[in-house]
Image (cartoon, rainbow, N blue to C red):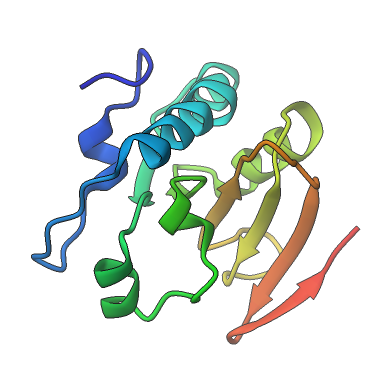
Length: 139
C-alpha cells in the first residue's frame, strides 16, 4: 500500500525481528500523516532516496528491540531514517518542515548515524541529540 509517491506501508512497518507488525487504523492514520507531512516533503527537498530503518513498531516489536516504553514508534508517529547525507536530512527537517521531535542519533559532530523524526497532532519542534545512550537538548 502506497502512503505517498515514495513511501509504502510495508517500508514503514518492516522489522527484522520475525514478529508480525501490523498497525491498527489509528496507527495507520498516524503513519500516513508522518509520510505526507515529513517523509515525502523531505524526499522532494533533498532529492535522493531515504531509507526507513525503523517506522511503526507494535508493543512486541518495540520490546524485542528494547525501545522506549513511551516510544512514538508504537503510535505510528516516528521513523528512524538514513540517507547518503544524514546531516542534510536533519537540517531540512529542522529548518523547513513541521515535526514533533527531531533527534541527531549517535554519529559525530559532522553527521548523525541516523535521524529520528516524529510528527503528531501536537508538534513540539523539539530538538535532541543522542550520544552514548543519553539525550541532550540542542538549540
